[in-house]
Length: 374
Length: 168
Image 1 (cartoon, chains in turn yellow, green):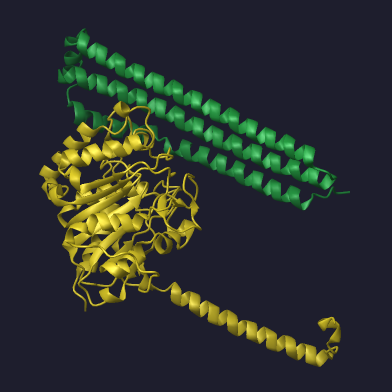
Image 2 (image 1 turned 90 degrees about the horizontal axis):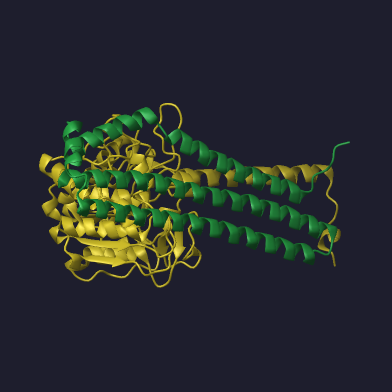
C-alpha cells in the first residue's frame, strides 16, 4: 500500500499550521546548530599551562619542515628534538648567493639537479656558526643531546631525498650525534604526512591534503617516540583523543601585520595537562594545509592528539594562511616563511633569526604556554 | 533559439575553467614572484657577505688560479654531471608527457568504441576533454619546474666554481 495515498488530504488551515510548526522547528534547530558552531569556533586567549619549556619539541611537513629546522636551530636552548618530514636544512634558501632566496628555496632546496647544486651544507654550517656566535640564534652546542626524526618518501619529487640527505649531513656536522637521528628513506611515499588511517590518500601519491596512508608507518607516533625515547618508554597513542581542542588567539602574538599567519592557532590540551606539568610539541603544517585551506584535517587527523593524551604532551598547531595582493606578503600557497616573504627589509630579509616575524610569534606563544597555571 | 547545453557539458566546462584558471593563477604566481630589483638587492648583499666587499680581490684570486688543472677538472666534471642530470630530467619529463598523453588517448579510444548510445558517446567526449586539459597543465608545470632547476643549478655551479678558485 502506498503510504502517501493513504494519508488524508489536509485542509488549508491545518497545512498552514503544520508548515508554521515545521518552519519554527527548523528555526530552533538552525539556531541550536549555530550556537554549537559558535561554541566550537569560539576563540580563546592562549592559556598559561605551566609547560616545562626545556622539554619543547617541533615537527612539520614540507614548508612546515623547513620551519621546523628554523624553530629547532634558533631556539635550541629549549628544544629536545625535532621531526622533519620532507624538509631541508636551516637557512637552506641562503645556500647560493648568486641566486635569490626564492630561487634557492624552489630550486636548490626542493628538487635540485645534483647534490653539488643542492643545499650548500658548508656555507650553511658557516652561517649557522656565525649567527650563533653573534647571539642571533641560540648556541649550537645545545644540539649534542637532542633526538631527531627524519623522513623522505622514495616517491617524493617535491622535496627529494637529495635535500634530506643534505639536511642529515648538516645536522650531524653541527653536532647532533648520528646515533640520535632516525632517518627513514625507504618508504614508497609521496610528498605527505603519513598516518595509519585507511581513509587518507594512497601512500605513493602527492596530492591535497598531503596526508597519506602508508602502513605500518604512523608518523606522529614515530616522531614523539624518537624525540622523547631517552626519558623512558613512550606510550602508544590513545584509541581516540579525549582532551580539549582549543581555537586560540594567534593574532595577539604576531609582531607585524605582514606575517601571513592566521588570526587563530589550535591547541590540544589533554585532561592530564590542564593543571600544568606537561611538555610542549609544536606541529607545523605544510603549504596548503592550514585551517583556511583544509579545515581541521591537520590538527585533528594526523595522530598527534592521540599521542598527547598518553604522553603528557600539549600540542600547539600554529597556522599560516595564503596571502597576496597590495600591502600583503606574497604567500599564495599559505606556506611557512623559509625564504623571506614576511620580512620588510628587501636587501637582507630576516626569516631565520629570533627577530624573524614568524619565529618571534611562535616563541611568544611558547613563552605564554610556559607561564604558571593561574 | 538558444542551444541547450547538457549537464555533462556544463560540468565539464566548469572543470576545464577550473583547470585553466588554476594554470593561469600558477603562471601569474610565478610572474609576481619575480621581483628583479628586490632580488638584485638581496643577491648583491648575499654575494658581498660571502665573497667580501672587494670584487677585484675575488677577480684576482680567480685569475691567479685560472689555469689550475685540478680546479679546472673538478669544475668541468661538476658541470658535466649537472648537464647530464638536466638532460635526463628533460627526457624524463618528455617521456612522462608522451606516456600520459598516450594513456589518455588510449583510454579515450577504448571508451569511445565501447560507447553504445549517443549520450554515452557525448559523455566520453566531455570526460576526455577534461582529462586532456588536466594532463596538459600537469605536464607544463613539471617542465617549468625543470627549467627552474636548470637555471638555479647553473648559477649555483658558477658560484661554487668561483668559490673554489678563491679558496685556493
